[in-house]
Image (cartoon, rainbow, N blue to C red; front, side, top):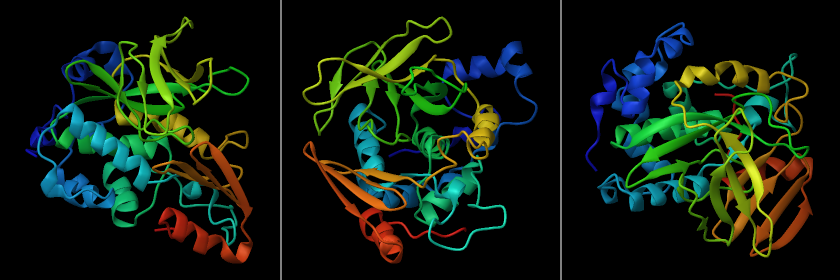
Length: 313
């Protein structure tokens, strides 16, 4: 594939909407420094190594089209786990006096080193953040957008608690490799057209009924009648640094869903696999299998089932 190195210039690549946003006075007031992607170099991402990390031969990626995008997304979610070990640390190893992991740093070189070189996973800001940079280098017209995951109580808080991407091709698509379960496995059109994935989960983007957001992503599992909302969002292009405040909150606040128990999950061809501090759960073709994982076998399970070795970098 021809790689777009124009992102190395001061415009930072991305879409025309993003470039307009960068020149808008309101957007400028949100920025107090240069965005980390503004001088993104191809070596900051190392696209060939990244492709190898997600199991794709770099020589087979040629054109920045929808088929390639779907292939990249599907490969990513089945190779790179969603995990919070950088926040909670090793649940069965030594912990710092301050308790925990290495912390999440929103920097493209740092994320490349963690995810690509060390073979780790991450949560939404890390995985969608780094994937955005890969797509930009490959010439996709891609924007970062801020979303809010909807909790079991129906509330969507705090603001910008999720990072997603929108890619413009024949139409605009939501592209997300940074969710836990359920996992978005393919690009979903922003125009409301539903798409089913390989395990029978249907996804669509609908208009939001909230006054503060424009859209909501919805999913419906096999056999379900009703749609469930995954997150709400607006299609406003954001810089990577826009997510820093919420990232800091989510990795430090006691009430954050990421500061409690460890969670590691990855999509599989037939479902998904999930590991907590004491339990491995596998979902295969709609069937759930669960088994207890002892402290002594936890690290071996992490490596065997998810391809991860916990390290602090």
